[in-house]
Length: 492
Image (cartoon, rainbow, N blue to C red; front, top):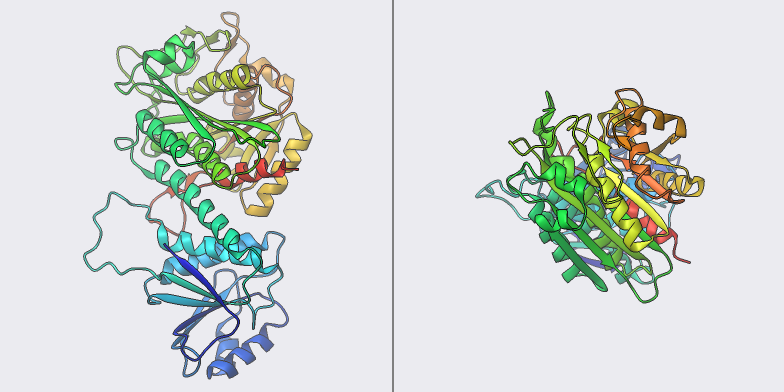
């Protein structure tokens, strides 16, 4: 694992140095000083380096270091520390094996970065962990000549107060995000509903004040989780219902997080005609809430948190649930199945009702890769957020901007409930293509017993997609920090 050290000045024995720089009017002066100190041509630096976001310039030097990296951070923005983490991740991912055993990162002499040292150290540490310690392809045979990434980061700065806590926070954040990404990236033959239960159990065993309860197979049906049972019964893999509870003695508030855990979605009898290749990611909401509760517990926040993951496969067999079936739910609300590919909201309905009835949370949040309609509306720049609680909406919006996990509020007006009314049952599971992500939110709202602090997050375009760190679509860990920082925002 990475080791982080602090020293006030560079020394002539430092082998490789990284200097992050902001795009300001002082840049030219800073580059002149860097050139003088390291013995490199100033005009060449100023001609070749503009400090654009994620820009990297590398040069060999005759003084102070063998190799010098300049890293552009772009212009100063409100979410500056998150930009730092992103830029450092990009640099460390690209150059992790070209450094040797250690790297010196100078954040004191040349940079004059617009944030306190603790926040800066945390952002850089998180970026280093991400760039060097996460493998998107755990099932791929490693290359015989694979080189090791750097292991030591020497900050050129005075150690900030409580620096150990700062590094620990970066480490635990990375661990939680990495667990979430690992679950989502695994193929469906390597990650099944039973594996969700294993992950939930492992989190509980390794986190303070945390317990776990698992229902599986017939226990799901016997518990009254009829909608989950209906969706999962066609598969040879048993449906599971996972409840992880973190309950510290000094808890100030109670939050329930419910995540969709469809480990593979064929569409059921309304079989998908496109996009099935990526349906291993349909459990992204479940992975996100498990990552979030792990982070909250490891940080020992004084918040009572319950993470619930209803999980199954949506498959096809002679035992499949069918379009036009009327099924029951944990809430006692009957549901007409209009589309078997609108299955995520069915299992979430049971998860939400279970959370409300058994835990009476102050705040209720569900996270799901629920609708393609949310991608049509917002693309891959923000998740769709639906709530009638203005305070929660504003809080999540502001947190999302700060950490680059953006959410945008969509209406949850009662008029949209008209689209999911039916003569044959209390509600139907599909309201047509118009306002698809909103009617899905209205469906879920019905199972919350009119909870005053309910938030629905449709993150279909956010938790899995194209990134600079892999050739194919991969998980992004979107939502883990969003939920953890939401919990932390309630700490008085």
